[in-house]
Image (cartoon, rainbow, N blue to C red; front, side, top):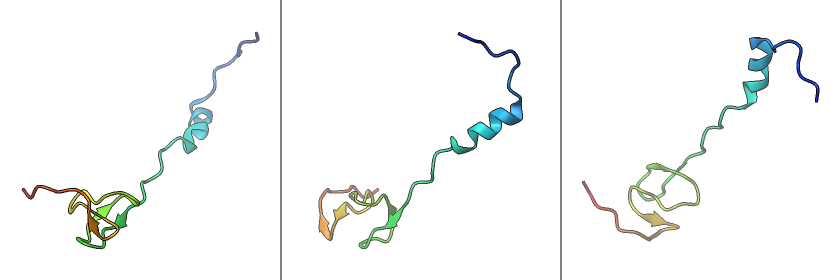
Length: 60
């Protein structure tokens, strides 16, 4: 198997890595409490999903 003769420069390495960053998570608003939450999931603040209470959330 052939091996590289010269090392890659840091600029070439960094250009390759420009697309490696994780994308930002998309957030939506809960229709009950207006807090931000992940879409298609139970709201962690009030415990509702699609207009009905699914889990009980302790108030601190």
